[in-house]
Image (cartoon, rainbow, N blue to C red; front, top):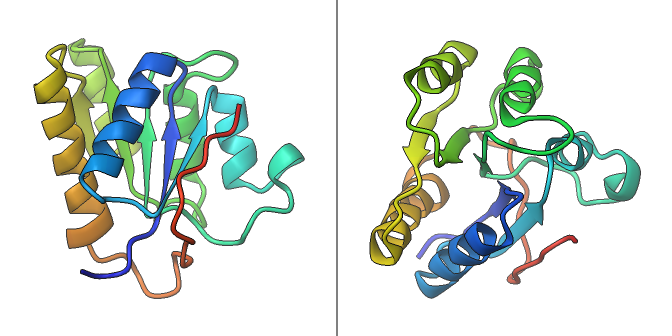
Length: 158
């Protein structure tokens, strides 16, 4: 299997974050998953500011973004990232419980790469995460030099 890369999970629900981490780990779909709990922390991570100013350079292979976040909501995070030429290359998958058509339409207007509604059923949730992880961490091919190598571990920032 090819070398897998870093995934950034932006999720304020501890339960949903644990489910995503378990699904990715069970299916061996990420070497490193960084979990941040709000939009402000996500932007700090991606732009290497604050607590993350010394983190390894490079972008995650994919950002899994919840829409309903504290501090800075997911739509604002998406807006900032997709309007920045340096960040535009980072794939963003909205992973949300929102089935609202305006949310879906707005995300695609802003340039989201995929929009996934979180299934309520545990097995469907795991299957959805497995599919997302498999595509973005294994099948999809990012531009050369856009993504760093990641050590083999799971990491959560609290």
